[in-house]
Amino acid sequence: MRAGSWQMANKKLDFRGQAFKDVLGFTFNHWAQQPWRVVVIAALVLCSALADVLTPVFAGRLVDAIASGPAGNESAWGAAVTAFCVLAALGLGATLLRQGVYFNIIRLTLKMMSEIAANAFHRVQRFSTDWHANSFAGSTVRKITRGMWALDLLNDTLLIALLPSLAMLIGATVLLGWRWPMMGAVVGIGSLLYIAVTVAMSLGFVAPAARLANAWDTRMGGALADAVSCNGVVKAFGAEEREEMLLQRVIGKWRHRTRRTWVRGTINGGVQGGMLVAIQAAILGVALLLWARGQASVGDITFALTMFFMLQGYLRDVGMHIRNLQRSVNDMEELVALESQPLGIEDRPSAGPIAISQGEIRFEQVSFHYDAHDQPLYENFSLRIAPGERIGLVGHSGSGKTTFIKLIQRLYDISGGRITIDGQDIAQVRQASLRSQIAIVQQEPVLFHRSLAENIAYARPGASRAEIERAAQLASAHGFISALPNGYDTLVGERGIKLSGGERQRVAIARAFLADAPILILDEATSSLDSESEVLIQQAMERLMIGRTTLVVAHRLSTVRALDRLLVLDKGKVIEEGSHDALIRRENGLYRRLFERQALELVKGLGESEFMRETAGSNADRMDDAGLLVGK
Image (cartoon, rainbow, N blue to C red; front, side, top):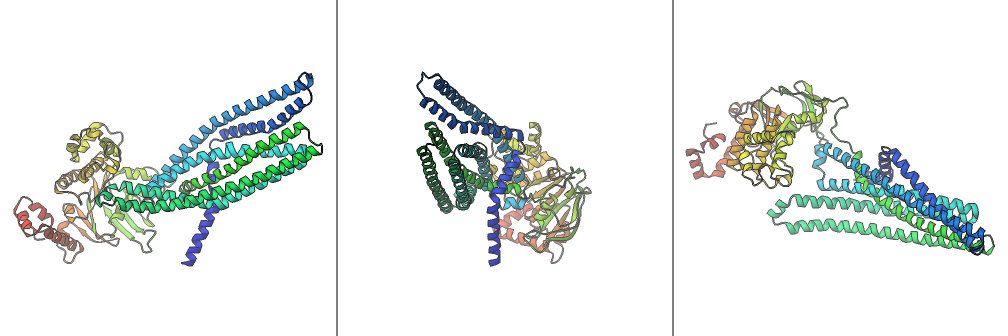
């Protein structure tokens, strides 16, 4: 444990040291996509800063001209008017230059923000199934949006704040040092010390606290999204106050971390203010000393004082800009980490589309294990599924049924062997092409908060309304959809919450009908439905299986009796296979034990009197499904 903790601490320290480098490198890479705009902005900013540097010089000349004689003195008047005109031109020029900077940086930043948001979404969509299972959707959204807006602040800080400030400091030091070396040394050394202390405090004192505050901000966003998206469960258990208490604990941590960040920022600002007072005293003291020695005129003193006041504003701004830089880098760290995280399952560079016509599936000496497990789930596993064959996957929880399905979809990469469809290695083709030709109906189908027509057409976005309605009819969904006030234009709510479980299943089946894919996966779509919905969905699924290679993950074994072949899995191995009738007659077989156990549970659930009515009435088929009427 100690060694592990030490390694984790080293990783954290390394992460902190790399943060600025990674974020700035990420930003500069995006600048490189618009190089000419960055150059234009920098040129305009430097010209504007030059105008500010020259302003005190001509302010001093104006005072000298006024002090040299009355307004009637032609030489003094000419010098004063010239200085005035130059000052006005410098002010107007600086204003116009800044407007040019703002127009250009708006285009630069918005293009960068758009690209970053699109790239982050692109990567998140392609992260592995495990990544999504271990990540809060709300936290992920918060990382992306916070990072986007932090980029706006970072661009402003680097290009229109720090760059002109540094140019002003260098220009002021050179001008003052050229006229009075002692004054130049005071300004230069004082500015360097001020910047060094500000940077050190921002990076070493404020940034670590800000990083923790951001982590708790992300966690708070995740907790909010988790509770809101599961509001139905919260209401079902009357747990509103419990969820509020949980959130209060997260908010308390966030408040504590954020308060510490703000306090440290305030202390940092106080130190900067004290240093500015010291620099002010030093510059004014040197100016008075030069005046006392007769080395500076009234205009020179005006020049020095004007330069100081402008310099003071820039120095104060430098401190604020460095704090903004530190804050924006902290806010972008998690977004940049998303960009640098490997996708998990990636297409090969030479990957092309897959062409599935027959739907033959082969596992050839396949080996696979999850990263968290030492022992492989599948080892040298081989299997052939014939074109158009209807296969049922049966077994205890953890036997490998779901993994089998996910491997066919290439949601995981195998460590050995290969999986082919119609002779094509699925690892060598594009994932999107592969999955677009596999229709899946999940146990808990997820719908978008869009119209019913859009949800059904998700399998084929270009489908006409007639095709959508035809798919709904085949899925036994057209009736309930037509009865809704807005019909196919009805919005279904987040994750389809406005529909019942059976209605969501029928919409998912309609989507699969519209996909018209050669391979179909059914993940026990009737396990948690009422009898009426189950009958409708069972009929729809039977229509859907026709002419397709079908894989059915079975939890309720009554749903797989009519399939061509059943595969009984245990710890990644096929320990039994055959038809329902063949497997049910196998002495001491796992399938028979599972089937008998479910039949016994059904009898207990019905009760003796209900059992007699079921066996005598029109629902005898249900008992037959359980194997109770046929002497299995």
